[in-house]
Image 1 (tube, rainbow, N blue to C red):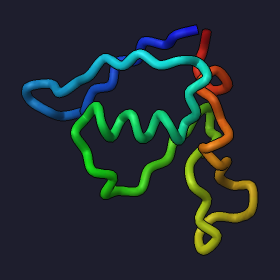
Image 2 (cartoon, rainbow, N blue to C red):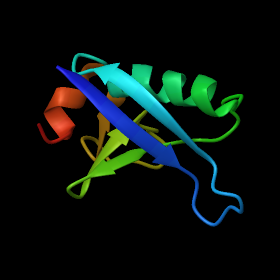
Image 3 (cartoon, rainbow, N blue to C red):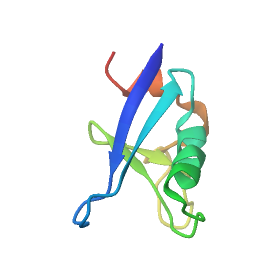
Image 4 (cartoon, rainbow, N blue to C red):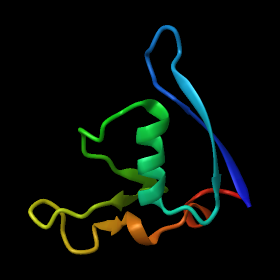
Length: 83
């Protein structure tokens, strides 16, 4: 399955957006890297995905309790996006 995702930045004039097509097998970690490239970003900021109240990203043992953040490298888009 292929997902067509419309990524846009809030509160920009003119609107900045990119269409991205990804395999349902793409992990959230891979999606993060693809977003960096598509938007012309250089990976300077921390990131996290929140889906249905669940946090996905890179757990930080200094701030996050065990199990509070699901490691993004093992989660595929098909597991968090609707069909």
